[in-house]
Amino acid sequence: MISIIGGGPAGAYSAYLLSKEGFDVDIYEEHDTIGQPVQCTGIVTSAIKDILHIKPDIIVNKIKTLKIISPEQKRLEIKLKQPDLILNRTKFDQYLIEKAIETGAGVFHNHRLTGIENKKLKFSINGETKYVTQNKYIVGADGPLSVVGKSMGSGIKNFFIGSQAIIEGNFEKDIVETFLFKQGFGWVVPENEKIARVGIFSYKESGTKLDHLLKTSYNNAKIIERQGGLIPVYDPSLKTYQTNTYLIGDAAGMIKATTGGGIVPSLQAAEQLTKSIKTKQNYETLWKHKLGKSLNLHLWTRKILDRLNNNSLNKLVSLSNQDKIQDILGTHNRDQILQMSLKMLSKEPRYFLFLKDILINNS
Image (tube, rainbow, N blue to C red):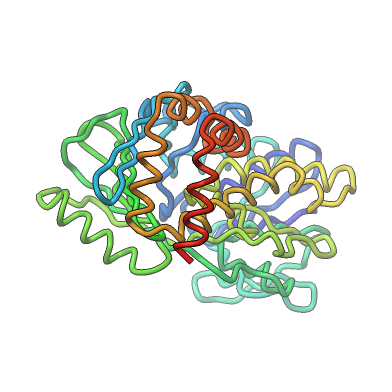
């Protein structure tokens, strides 16, 4: 038997793959409704289509253009060869759970794991404590503050904060705007011409920064809903396996540090988790072989970006505003950062000078 803690994409897709391989799987989900509350913008690259089929009604919009805007309003426009997809996160999560159930997985709602004691899982269910005998395998897909991780003596130490508002207004349906600022960025992700997801990604005060963005750019907009949550900073030294106990998704920090996106890496890691349990191969070796270089490069890029002041951000956008660079950015998505970076550096050697300059002057 396998106990999976958390019914988000990482947990649900792991359950589906493992059940399909013949394992007995139970999912324990903290909330009474899968996919709620929403704590994610739900924008993914076309790379997700290489992993699984997504039902059309889950996709609320397709993005053809990305606009990156510097602090001084310098603009970089990227035409995507393959559109980004905007997902209804609740429907997406529920779709993955349905797939898991169809292959035989059990799902227990309102089970919030509070600890692991004497080989028993300790849950809080509507304020009451329940103990469940620990199964042979435990998978911690229980988010950035993972209780499973803490039971291993592991866990995420550093976080970004995401704050988002769903607003009414007038928007260009197929364009996402990203606003750069020191140590973070803001976004406007349209669901359609009248509804958009507007948010902030930063290390601190994301709510205050979101309020400022809404006041300055969308002062008359009606706020339908506010969302938010912690986004783990990827840590390559984090322990993700210990004696039949595994961490995956946000619990393992499997996040692209440049953007805060984690859906595609989580699904890819679920495939490696299944392979590990089925073949007895080392889990960390498998998932890091698949994802490690990419997540490390995202982290390294984030550290560089965090050192940029407004002037350097303006220079970076200006340097990238060339047809040859725009073509690379439009052809290679964010889940192909290694290929993208190598081609950009080969086409524009001035990036090396730019990096040298910021490492010297922006420390």
